[in-house]
Amino acid sequence: MQRFLLRRLRRNILWVTLLVMVWLLCSGSALAGSIADRVSVFPHWSGKPAVQPSEGDLVYPAWMDGPWRMTSTLEEMVAPLTPEVVTPGFEGNRQFLDVPIEADIHFQKARVAQGKFLNRPLKNAEGVVSDRAFNGLSLARAYLGDDWVEAVKVDPDNPNRQITFLKDNQQLVSTVTGRAVEQPDHETFITTEVFQQFFRGGRPTVYLNEVENTTAYHFEQDHIVADQITAVYLSPQDPDYFKAVDQPVALYRYGLELYPARVQG
Image 1 (tube, rainbow, N blue to C red):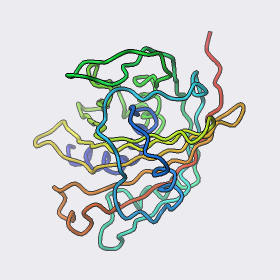
Image 2 (spheres, helix red, strand yellow):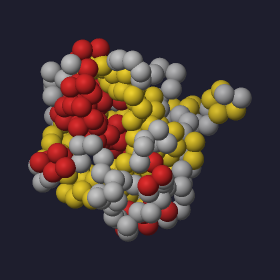
Image 3 (cartoon, rainbow, N blue to C red):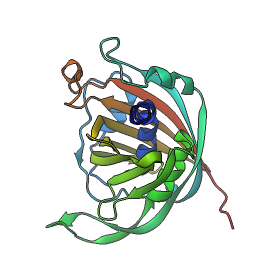
Image 4 (cartoon, rainbow, N blue to C red):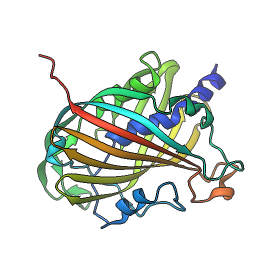
């Protein structure tokens, strides 16, 4: 049973990656032009993005405030190092090409720490942030199914860390380690994050691949569109690590559409 559960989780891990990317975003300093340039040359990525250590919560533009109905569609998938290296689940994910997946997500105003000194917040300011617990659960169930996902919790002391609780006492732990943000104009918001995931619930702990999520959001009057790319990198524990080092071994490109959702009264 343990082997079956792990095989199923690895088959679906790239979809969990998308869930985390949409809502588990944190603040960082802008690196002018670098993320937009990276998106424009997809899928010709030869290394990891330039990011800074993750601290605090990501403050989104004001136009992202509110409840949204999101549609995500896998539009393109590339295995740059095939046939030498192909990640588990890559071929199985072809069934999702051009298939829209829908979920409700929330963004809301909150008091957000802006920077730290001696591990304490310098100041708090109001900003738009993701409703992490709601979004994590909504997206996880949309991709993996209600019977597979029991709950999603965010570390109260670290917004960069979440745990997805799965059936049969399995857990997926995701931790953002680095990020960068750009806002080239009032209607565009671009972010990239690198995070690590590991699966636990048996012995020993199974370390999973390092993942990058890069998303360019654009506000269009009454809705939001986004170009989203997920890149998978092998961990040093992987036997094929030296065949890839810092090159992505799987790339997935999604088209996102967010329309205002009706609030249930």
